[in-house]
Length: 210
Ligand code: DX5
Ligand code: ZN
Image (cartoon, rainbow, N blue to C red; front, side):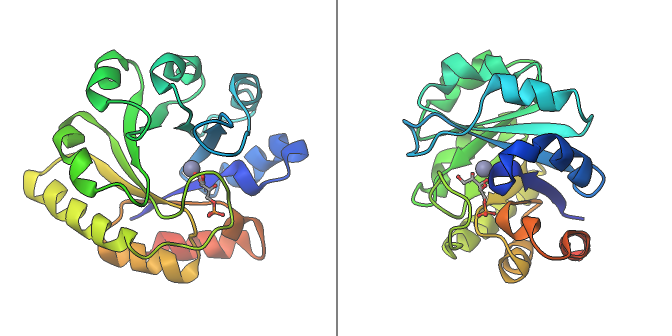
């Protein structure tokens, strides 16, 4: 079964406490989009906000660090987030993976980054997150080129029998989720699509994908 992560990016930030209550029993984890206004042209939230949300729920928190200096900042989130993902475009994985301890680890690839770049690190990480939009904003259109990357990575992971899960982030809806599941994704992250309409029904649909 595919795991579902809800990104709070398109939630009403004045209501984040109740957002936790709404989603904690529906999804597998909460995805925190941390943007520094430098690595990406947008600024979101940081440690104080996540620490406050941590007190509201026990669900797994995943930090998606869209920051220029993850080597310095990952530890800030290690207390509140069980899983921390950094961009390969921001830091040399060899350097940071050596330091990351006590959390699940993930590497994120931008849409234009060659999937080959993550292959040497697959044995050391828990998640390979493939962006299907340019990082920075919710509500963008899904970039179909990611499907080939998912397919290729899934073949490698299965062939080598690795524990690393493939995750996809950006532009997820009914149609694109199905395409990602057919390509072999293990986890799906969605934000704007999961904030409107019958959210429970949409999540049940996502969970029915395998
Ligand atoms: C984009 C973020 C995504 C984003 C997804 O920079 O990393 O997690 O919130 O939003 P939707 O699902 O609306 O594309
Ligand atoms: Zn994200």
